[in-house]
Length: 345
Image (cartoon, rainbow, N blue to C red; front, side, top):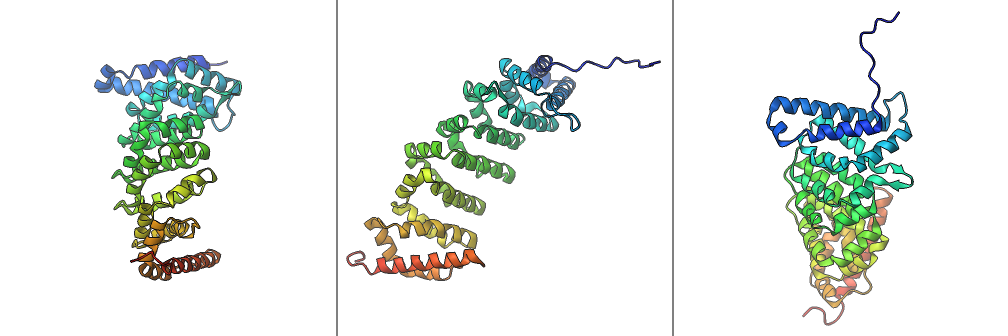
């Protein structure tokens, strides 16, 4: 004979859960937020609903998620505009709720329903949500959560392309130098994904915005902050050497101002920066179609450059052998250019 006093509650359907999530998020209005006890109660309700959503999307460790329910939940979240609410209410949520939201966000975005990424399509129709997420880097409490959500969005080319082309993109040049190390590092991860995940889209963007982009990027390369200099130099190598960006690289290595930046970085107090700078500097020097202005700079500075290069060593092992070979070729080319007639008066 059963003596259970409580009837086990029936699990919510995806539609009921989405309604509960929406209602609990809508309850976080300005009146509730201003009242401590009311806010605590409202946040508890949100957190409870997020835990249920997390289990429905990814199971509980013992049972696998029901994929039909996952599809229904995903569709309903888009239909009821809950995706927008999740972003707009993020700053009010507690730490645990934000963590669960980031977990659910990645599953929702990757969820295909009838061969369509419906959450991605929703964001394509509400691009302002991406701008909102980018601006959240200014709020250190939620910056890293928003960064994780943004990088999930950037996996999809249409969303990455929007951010690249938007005015929000320019904010990354500020965010990667924020005084909070964790936030600045996270912003740089997102910045890197934007410039490396979708080669063809990046090539189109850099072609259209070459001058503005590299003007800003030069400030990162010459930043007083060591981490900024090192990361931006490494990233520059990565995206310049991507095959779709070959025309960008060819244009970059014709410019005296950028050669001078690399020459300055060759003198950096950090060996890591010197080595990274060498790998871009060598492209300027090895270019068979160097313009006269580049040759003049190399010839005028050949003694200092040769001394710098001769004191530079790559490390140990096979990579060091290759580095020494490349260095030898670059030294010979600088020596050859320095002997050309009518370059230096």
